[in-house]
Length: 264
Image 1: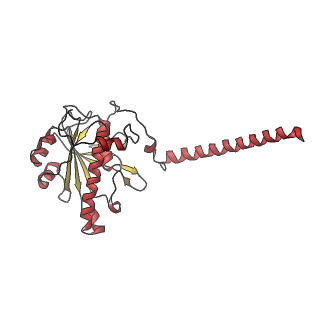
Image 2 (image 1 turned 135 degrees about the horizontal axis):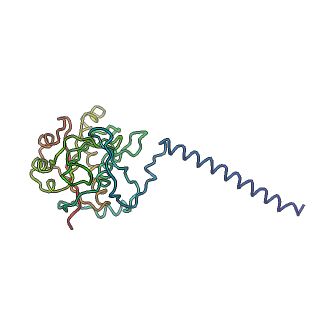
Image 3 (image 1 turned 120 degrees about the vertical axis):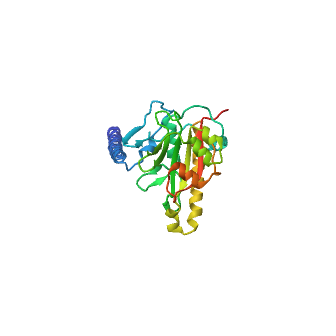
């Protein structure tokens, strides 16, 4: 009997190991299946250690460009970004990398949970009243022509509104604030209030304004994390900004956010 104990212990250990291997294999297979089906958000596992300057924009159809995938694991903590955040109004004459440009747009309204349509900024009742536009100067984003672009969060693309350098005109509509004219890119946040007021009545206007504030802070923090500088601008003539952007009258501009490499 004594001589049989080691054999029993060894057999039990082998069985436990076999069970572990089988369950681990099944777990790995299930994870792989869900990952490739898109049921697990693949972006949560993305980790890019730096900016890839070789990334190029892809035109998937006329006037529609697919942006580089967003980075969801960075090198700066949220606490550090909050601590370092400052309003920057002077910028170097230096173009933005396409990946950084894409990251700015994603941080404003990008998708974080495609199944439920959730985005990077909270929205009352998931009504998402905001529209995001980018005003890009000549030779100001690597690999991208100057122009006005509308961001499409659902497929992380930009759509050409019109081509050309409109920074001076946008600056003129904003009381000639020169940081708008000099920044390589300005992000414009506009609200379609009816998307939210149809659910919340007049209170929805306040909710949409709050949401623009959330997006503004996102832009500040992601710019800080990428060694960029930004400032939020609220002083402008609404109708003139609408005219420059060529947007409908029900899209009310709330913020202009110039972004670039800051002068130190």
